[in-house]
Image 1 (spheres, rainbow over the protein chains, first blue to last red):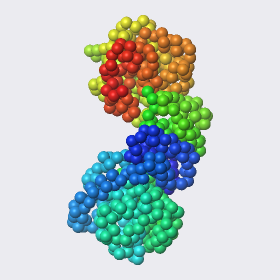
Image 2: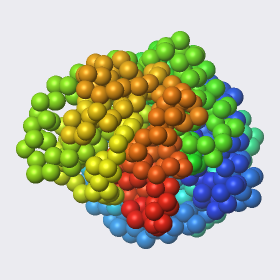
Image 3: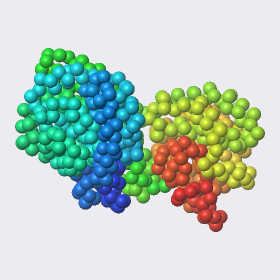
Image 4: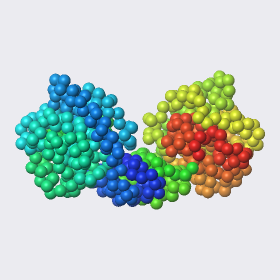
Length: 301
Length: 301
């Protein structure tokens, strides 16, 4: 997905929120803001918003000297969702369709996105879980995803945020685990999950976890390690979580990339043709083009 | 009031909204955005937000070739509020305290601010009128204002927006009109009232109206004509409407500048120590300093 004019004020809003997470020094916050404004003046709108997000957070980390401003927030959400784990497992177990329920929970977990929400207090987990279990999908390609899982010999699961990966663990426990490689970011970026988080929530004990080599809040393939790129290319099926992965991989030239996410910003909601707050299970453009289909789920493209 | 870091994302949001008002050409919108980003990177935070607002809208007008992007919106609100005029007059007439009711209505009219609200559809006049008549003042220095009006030999009334000036007319009709000079902007800036609007709503028939010489969405004294500056200095009392006038005149070095406004943005609400949506009748810092008072209304300074 390209960057839209509407992304620009939001980049600045994010810059300010993240600068304040990174440092209390007002002068440093101002320096960061000026640097991002200069970068934004020369911004390439043909790149994805994730490219700019990566560059903004590099500036914040460099200027503030804080390599991991969201460390405490990540801890908080890993802990909070681990506490919910038994209750969430119970919901899946008691469900008529455990796979669909586990997918819904994995999407509910996608609310834990501090790139969009300003602080952890803006996130109401229990409310989001209840809503996400009840609301209709705005785009529902779950049946295709379920089929693709059945026939896939290898599945790459691209994680998104800390805390959210506990929800992902619950979904993965409903899938053929031995076929799955779970990917996390190599360096801290916003509250995205790293290997440390995957260890903390026990993901590394149930599935193979790799780092992708990148510090972008999505999957910019050219930023990733050769090993990651190879595994990504070879996987029969990719399950990608969250807006950042959708923004960076929707136009990727391979089939069978499925996206599970909550639409949290107006630009992405418009791109998907849905309302903010919608829950989405869709797949990438090339998948449909390859199958000779016109897009079925996304109203506006 | 100085510019805060939080003003920056808002400047960009306003830039985009105003660019879209000014032109449908996406390339022009992008050019405007890049120019404003470059300006913002070098922004002086010691100036008021109104200075940047003025500069942003100069860029928009220049790049789009549209000298008055809000012309239709101004017409719309002049017409809409003129329709309400009899009903509003009736409210004042039926009131136990016509002056206070007229002040409340003048503050209600301050909601018509397209620098903050994105489009005219974001403004609900009837709801705002009802709320403003009922809600307590967050800062209430109405008694002092009423006294100052009684003793003043000359009053300068600084208008704010088109449509809003119909509400101002209702307040002015409760005041000693012959002592009042009403000031409007000389050039179109956002939806601020110009001489054309003052004529349209009949203000010119009941009071002396002058142009201030400026194209800023507030009162930057050094931008104003010598005549305006002289009248401003000589007036015994200044009644200034809206956020822009508060931002530019709160630190002015003369006594008896009163502000009537609705707090519509988080930065200004924090400066005033009130909640967003509050109604405010306050006066400038120098007024209190001269009287040897500590500030009485504003919690945080």
